[in-house]
Length: 165
Image (cartoon, rainbow, N blue to C red):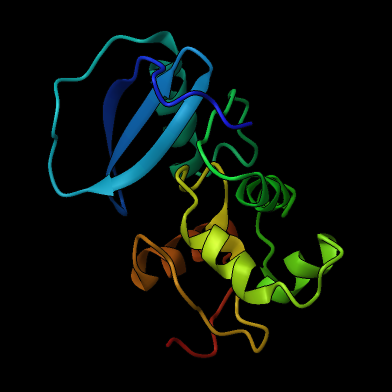
């Protein structure tokens, strides 16, 4: 889905073990979850934001593996296809950029998949942290590799990245 950019946005924040999350929503759904250093705007009382905060808190407390929220990211058609495939990666598992490209029936689109993955506006719920290098290395994460490793370890205590770039 590529919602119009003029949708009214509401914001709230959640402090987590990985840092402060800014949660954005509009009338269509959650539009962004990003890491921020400090609260940038006053929080709103949008019911979808309360639901997102509850589900994210449950996730960080190992009480939730699947999110049940309407999503409204803004992106190109290709990016939205990649983001949808990210949502299909099961909790506690990983795959490579090449795996995603193959699922798109375009195995040569590895770099494009990596670019779309890096532009994912909805961290954690659209689990771009579950995409790793083909050789098992932690590669790229907008929130930083330390956060990516934490999220992967949270989801799978057996996870151990062999390398980081």
